[in-house]
Image (cartoon, rainbow, N blue to C red):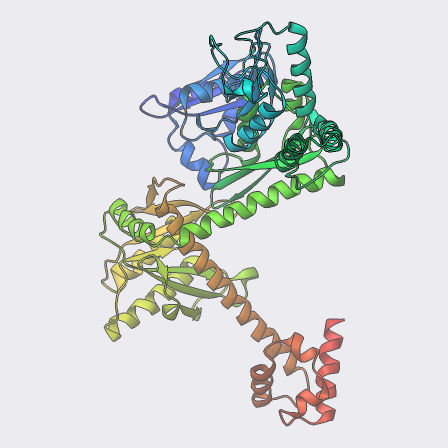
Length: 593
């Protein structure tokens, strides 16, 4: 940390405000808010951080701050600053991610329109709708039911809408303010849940027309009722209180966040919206930053209630927006938030599944990764991970990716032989030595890139064995993890240094897949090894079970659980007498209890 930064940190005020982090070019790369600036800004430069935050901190050479009088002012100012500067490490609501509303204009002759901007113009706004199609369906229905003017500019003669009975034609006749107000109130009532009353009125008119033998007119009323059902009754979840509310949940995985918004109007869930993006800061803070931006331009068209996950800060948002904001801990409301979060989790899984099936981009990612590292295209990647949970049964595993795809026939398992206890560096040295000395002897196919699950220490240990013992110069990179054991940073070089890689790139996702796969393979092998050891040690305690019978039992049953649940008859098939079989079952069941 340079002396200028230290001096500025020393004089930070203990007041609420916003801070702007800058890189060496003077570019604002991150904007944040704080209830106490002194504590929050200092926290970036003290203690340890996960890989995501460390990447941000490594670029900070200066900062500015703006003091405000309250946490709410800091929240609003943060939204303004993010919109103004577009910092690349901030979670941002993209400019094209606006939502449509139905608007009843505040004019002498009002009309309906669809808009994505909510402004203070005394008009009435209803929404938001999750997409233009949904808003358009509702507007078309209202246009058929209520004869407000349709033309943006009032013409000099009537149009087709007048002849269809869908416009009062203010272009050729006076339409009173009272009549327009009546229509506006009816439309407002309809959009606020009064469509059931409208259906009832249309049903009565339909029956009356049928009795008067006006079958064409009755058919028109019937079609209008069907349209109301089709547009307004697409419900998935219902609440009896008929309150307009937004339910928001989120999920994070592989450095990405997905936010799911459920729109509930008049107690019924009409639609949902999903947004995914890479994030770099604290997940709860970044989520609240996104939610704040989401409602920033919607002050005139807010729901009555907003439901958020328990990890959020509902009080601050409620005070700013002036509506009820809750993080429910029980009841159906909590279930709805959990449902939104679960849908967000599923959406992320789907996103990653689709990315993994995109062959063309996977091949391109392999090529791009080689270009970024300056090593040529790594068509064959070999990755290593050690596993020694609780220091027992240390093992290592290797997976192979060919052209960006897992090549499971090439996977290898290693039991650590020369290292005692949990020594990651020593284990890495042994495995690298065994793997590549064997390939040298057999003249095997060497990899284009070796990936180590770990940071500088593991990379250096692998490179030392390769270069100084085996005379091999194979590129080695490491994948450092964050506190949640997720891929956070690519390390490469001699000495190893962080490599900037966009979190939303296919190259980053390729490395995540490699790391996840080798970790899964290592953990599975470790569990198998521990299971075999536990099985052997427990069987050794039973008189009459020697090496030969122990191997026979393990081969046949595979686990203590299956052996414990077996019958005497199952043991007979192995040539084990009833007496010994009963002793084995009894011994194992006693151990369980």
